[in-house]
Length: 247
Image (cartoon, rainbow, N blue to C red; front, side):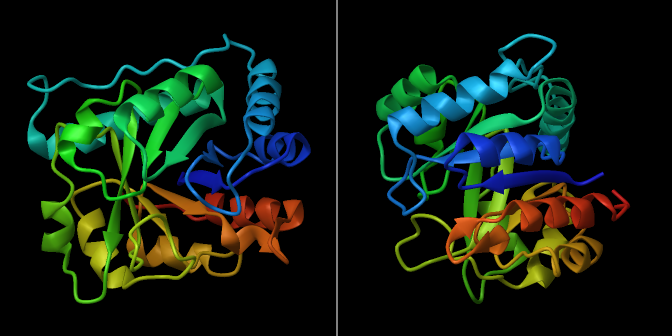
């Protein structure tokens, strides 16, 4: 089934209900955003989610290292590792960062007890290599970009996973809008990734059928008046998990 990430959570109750609904990953935003969590919010959410883990508090990953697998199978191998970890420690806790230094990212990730780091600010390969935790790297897809352009920005052997989202002028996070899914579908033919941008409970099934992504990521699309709506979160997860993919 498709991996589901619910991003931009800000309180314990919603985080726990999201976990109960079957989310594989939850995202806590540390970048400049109206959804940015305070240190106290982060602490409370992480502690609550980890208290619900029945097989240990810290997620572990058995992903490949450079030289062990071919470039062609790098992201597929990491996808298998992330799926196995999600099945055991669901939901994995992902910190979303942009506009920081590697040291700042590592310090926050350590203090918060995050499982994964998502870099959404257009960080380069050297930056990614200096982040200790496995990295999900966002590729911002701008109008006119092709699948070849996406491949050029998603070099195997650096990040553990890929996240495709519509590019914004500042390139510091998503826009909440969809990009050209035909480009994403071409990338999905040979590379797993999380699809983001413009997804809602009503559109996610169609997006999965068209694109065949490894996973989907949503924030704005499960909100009502700018606040996370647990009924929309449940509906989104049901819709996403109800579609079989042919990878």
